[in-house]
Length: 517
Length: 86
Image (cartoon, rainbow over all chains, first blue to last red; front, top):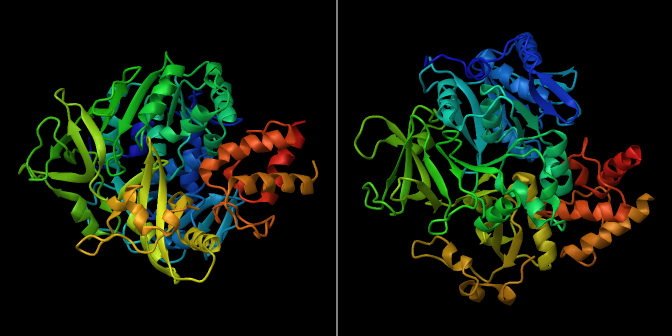
């Protein structure tokens, strides 16, 4: 592989401008591979005409639809850096991302009302381009032969989102690593991930790489079981790629036979969070002929392993295997003593391979904490993942948790300290902390607050919610709030979250023994 | 269905499901997600409830999460699409 190979050329190498094969579809709109290539070329001209330079960051803040997918490919193909951002994050957070990545262009849906202080706004069919001022600084701390392809913004403990930066060669290596997954070209791959998840990039890349058809599923259908099943059938989806929680409304549906009407689905791939074992077994029992695949990894490497699961799955120590490393990937486990862990021994997962990210955008300190020398003393850099895993006697890996306070909810990576920081800055809050409540794999955020305001507790919580909603994405909003007299502390002065996770132990700290709202 | 009737039925449902203060002033343009009245995981139930209230199936085409943000957007977007499909 050449260091300067383009990710887009790699995934579209099977397509040509005359190719009538359907590349992607969304609702009533279908694009052939030929049209996709033509649109990419046309959008590259739009970038040139808007004075975007190779290496510039271009933000797309849109839902996943064909024009947004084509624009993302045009950006990377042109040599600029694609930065997908969620459509529903608070404006304050979006502005902090603009500060961090200094884009030269922001691409939105034409009907989006936001004003980013652009020099000029250009409306173009269904999209709107915001031309941003100035020539921003570039992160030059890397080998310039291996260009950056995209940046995924994720929750950061300091309150500023981290920009995980992937190069073209790393993204290509990741897709090559999935070669064994081998998707036949006649497959129709359902994708419901928003643009700002790298899962969306994975879906797009793996589908186009194998010459299959990408079917974009409207995100609202993740909340509408009947509509979701109807859409899968109407679009003859054969493989559905999603986070596990997309299946939750279907599993919770009052219509016990809702899955019986699925006629085309042959394979379910899930990633980005654990599938609650009970829910997975239920889904498997209702789709007895479907193949189930778990893909596991981090945005820092797109993926590192996958596993075709048995139906029904066999859990080991309550965990579902995440499989073995991808092609050209090394995974190993380091225990508390800094040694390689034995079989069945839990330790921290380290990953090594050509698909590792280049670093966190303009954040060398954080990069140096995560990309470290190989702890075994071998040459090369490894990614210190923060995941706690173990290997069984067959070398299969199992995920058991995290070393830190990072959690995954609805596929979103959340640093709990970031939520704590925002709530602790509210003037009527004396102290606050958050934990994750795990109810048989279904996770929600619980917040404990020592309140010094004179407001009624319910009014106080509404005020807190309003404050949080102005600064953090909706998925970081705690579900339950508890009034506390004080918070349990460790000897080092930090909050002892383990006490708050124990419903009996925490009672002594809570007002009214813990009535949530 | 008239707007007023739709609002009162949805408010009655949300009052049952959430712990909003008893004197909460329901505004038709308040973002119900931002104040925590609707969590994203409650959406499936709300979708079912709107189908029950209106006696119609929600149209998938063009449907967005944003349509559930406020009472007004629910009525204007979702019920409009139902009417168009009839």
